[in-house]
Image (cartoon, rainbow over all chains, first blue to last red; front, side, top):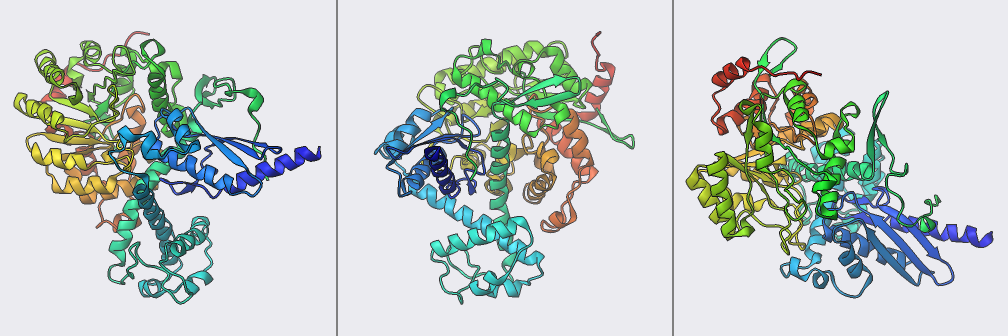
Length: 272
Length: 341
């Protein structure tokens, strides 16, 4: 009994650490997106297995690879974990992604013929920039909605931003995430530093603020398109429609539409 | 014909539809199964609940189904049917020009059938273009740059082999090049939704019209930039349009960007049938207004009735040399026929 409780706690720890792994393209936690399918902990050996599925069979394998890699890295950091095996299921390049994520070969080697000699580091940086932009736009629009003027915003210090309390759910959620990426990137460090600069580190100007916001909006429109589709496709993948007396309804895949890969291994998510 | 609440008749050209066979009998492998399942997920995800279909019908719908959904229940006057072969996934092609043409024979006045080719087939691609022009007198083609072909997992519009094909299209008067721009897989070291090849191809082939389906989403900013520079680049609203139901504010933001950058003369309605049916899309679109605050950020652009008429039919009519008055007369002489139950 005690062992069972402990195992559940360890699984909850794994779920917690996965809350901090983001889909690089969407800048949303993979746990929020519903990508994690199964977590299995073997206490005795310190081995963890994590299975994940993406919204479609066709999702880009480089994003899948980045996610799988980040999952393995995050779980392996837990002090009691000896090793983690990450498995991507139902994907057109599942075997190769799994080979790369769990082995020592680099992505560029596993996918050599499709990489044109490039690597993933630059791509990761592109995604970081987009994440920065999206988080920053949410905070900026939140400030405008709170009545802060262009002058207030372009001159705002980190200290002042820290004192702003947002009512809106999304602004409140994105503020600490914006702050985190700002500091991680070295764009601000001290309480007196400017809270809002461009990704390149340039200060914002009052007369340029509207154009700057329009640029941020453009990036967000693209990300939101992906995000909305990914969430929607994730929620409807493996589901079908039945037309009954009351009209059409979505039937959950649990209703024997898609049998679990191996029923003996499938455990429900342990909620912390 | 779409008739508004105050009795106005609006001419509708549906710029992006299919007559596909994604049924298990036509699937070659797991990829074919997963391809139609992905389409089905788009359908179930973005359709209003009352518009949902059961999967077997979605996989393969009948000649009666398409006619009823587009022209009887739906408001379309003309539908442009796109061909997409996906030869590595489907035995007889996913939506072939031969099958679509046979379907359209019952009502030829209502369909425009476009062809397709794969530049990676080399000489055979050129033969395919000749065959489609001579046999079906095509005016346009659909390009699917993410199609798999043996070891290749995709191609770009500015590949030298593609240029040979476009040169032939230009020579034969195949002027409308519809390009699917969605997730492509390679190169894997890049962000996977690149639209820059459109810029090269549109510059180098000024006589051809480049209709970018899905407006390059999720690369709307890049697409807008290219479409602003190139007078022969158009945006197809398929896939963007269904957001009008699930995320109307988001749809308004997309339309505001498109109207501001690309303009009302270069946007084309498309239902993407059978992923979505046209009736609810056109009804909601006609009733739609861009909210004030979103419009204000983009110079006050708005979806007026005049703008909607262009998007819903007049712009596509220009590209396909349809004389709207003549066509209306022809269609009213051959009204939609409701099959006996």
